[in-house]
Length: 462
Ligand SMILES: Cc1ncc(COP(=O)(O)O)c(C=O)c1O
Image (tube, rainbow, N blue to C red; front, side, top):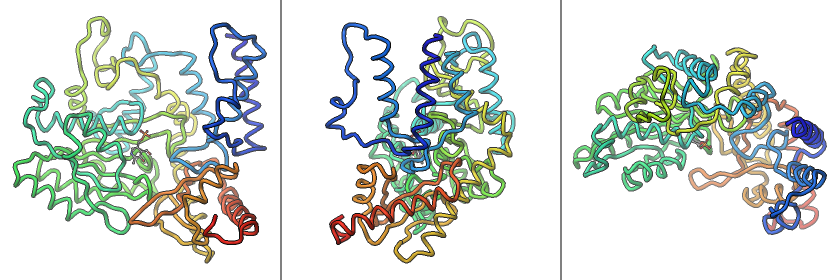
């Protein structure tokens, strides 16, 4: 192990130095990947020097997600205390299903879950677990909703159930995918329209639910989004919670992207009414900035977790109470320890530190929004109270500009679509960035466009 730790340190230090010099790694087209890097596997071992070189090249040529030039997805940056926790989780290599196998790490996970439930405003009946990502926590919510609608499905399967699901057209693509996994079926997902700010249309939702009931369907789940993937919009919870109560429908809030606003006194109003929902999920690897993945699902009544996910296994559960054998409420059997990285961060900075992380992202978003507002070359497509900044520059097609910036290793940023407008989506999720880094993003983009305008003279050809 010693030598591997030395190699780790060497390569990690080279990566950190390289990130400063080259915040975007050199573009390698997928056509050339296997020619450019020593990735191939062979029958025989290779010598240590060649191994080190292959590994170092691979690391240094991999897209850099922790730098001031990565704005492409809904994660970014590197939080050192969280990295420390994750590295130790790898060294420990526990599996979280039993107390026997994970010991005090079970306590770590339980404390994190309990604290989040307390922040939501739930009592001791609440609970939660970790899963491999926001798609999977949404899946867990859908399974609990399905089983709540009809507990016999767990044993009998989906026989003439006619269950229906409601989610906005701006919600994450895991909803239809999970509908197919759960047996509910993609065709039974009702895609509800939104207002001009990307929030679910409450009237349309009500109408669709009532229509389905009249047709003999059984509405099982309403999914709301706290931070839609493109615009970062927050669906209204309070009014819809009343509706779901009236019709006895499971209400889930998918906060994978921006659910972490629960930690911010300034922004938690965006989740007003959260305590009334049945389940809530969020990704600490997004706004909180832990390494991937760190996805939590919380449930107001933990019995629902047990009802949907418990299965006896005498070869596994041999000691301790269910409460400490976390496999009893988990989607998986073997499960990596995703709680430790969140705990190391939380323990070191406190809840107030988590709040600072969240607030910083909104401050950076304001810097970006103001920059766009004060510069006529930009057209804004974004909304307030969001960390997704959506815009176009000089009418240049977003797709083309983002792809050229990527191919020339200038910036990693993506594009999105809302109401037929395509635009660049800058995500200010990296709380290690400072206002200068956001301004530098715009200056880099402008310099790049200017350079190419001089080369080819018309923006349309870009
Ligand atoms: C709103 C929303 N829900 C769910 C997900 C899926 O999360 P994951 O990528 O962890 O599966 C995302 C991912 O961006 C998201 O934006």
